[in-house]
Length: 463
Image (tube, rainbow, N blue to C red):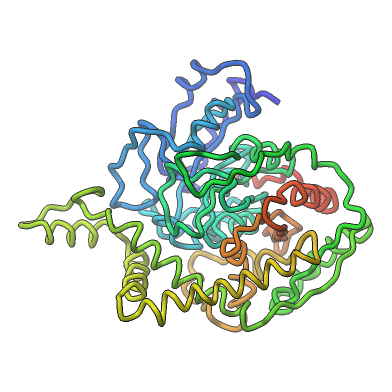
């Protein structure tokens, strides 16, 4: 379906009108010139979209949510921007994000917090919260994000939209400002499964500019939408299900499971190694922050970054990084620097990598028996902004249920979150995982879940 010029301009105006309430946009992009240069073909013809602000956009400021890049204007487009432009998409906004994608709340952006369209006192989740908010508010039908631990899929749960993280290497990351290179995935948000499948057809494919991109042929993912799931074998991740404290979320999940069984799927509870499940988050934090520390060493005011002057080079670098990075990001760099020190690499960084390998082996072994693995995407609805700091991610309550989705980043397997219902007027999501390159099956089952819940193109009204 092609969108009209009037619909694009309306989306642009709606994005600006909602900014005071949502604070979801870092830079607005006037669509007039893009509309004037538009052809008459493309799978996303005239679709108004928003793009996370860590994706390089030629001639348009790209800050990655950090004050240190406040003045950075790329001279080239990321590969995915070229693909989106060729498909006819129209970019209307660069969206808010946790600083350098290092966070799960969207509270650390240099422009301030993003707000959830369903309740502005609550977080969107992060780090792709601005993109999730604009889709949830009905501003755009699709928005680009990135996912290193659950940075697309957790905001999708909190905001009640579809959030997709495909197989590692399925989408080129060339031109996307990195967080942790072995974990980073380009992802995206839509209002429904059909648009999600179509978007992956546009974004996928080998890119010689990204040596980690895969050679696997791009499928017609849309063809899987509408297929039945008779005899599909689906495992429920019991480690997550049993840790969730709010049983209303489990009740919503149980209704989806009953619907899947009625559609002919075989659904069983499975339990993975509890110690390894509990090790996902601490291992992730070590690996991700070590890689981030290395990736962002060039943000020093000499090579890149909004320079703060000093009397000599070292002082320039110290001043630039001290003023340019927020407090939470500086803490993560301390963790990363510690893990990368020569004396610590073997007992910290290498050990975390070895644990990761055990977790991946466990996860991939589960897919030898099951076509898909499902669980509630989060153990709670979106927390209130002023309550986030009181949450302990290492507590028994949260350690597994709130952090397990990073397992798909460890293994590079495709993963999708979609709405399954509401608790106290706030959306709650279900997470669905398949084996590598099995995005078609993921969309096939996801569309059936969408049919069961009836939550297609469900939007919050931002007044």
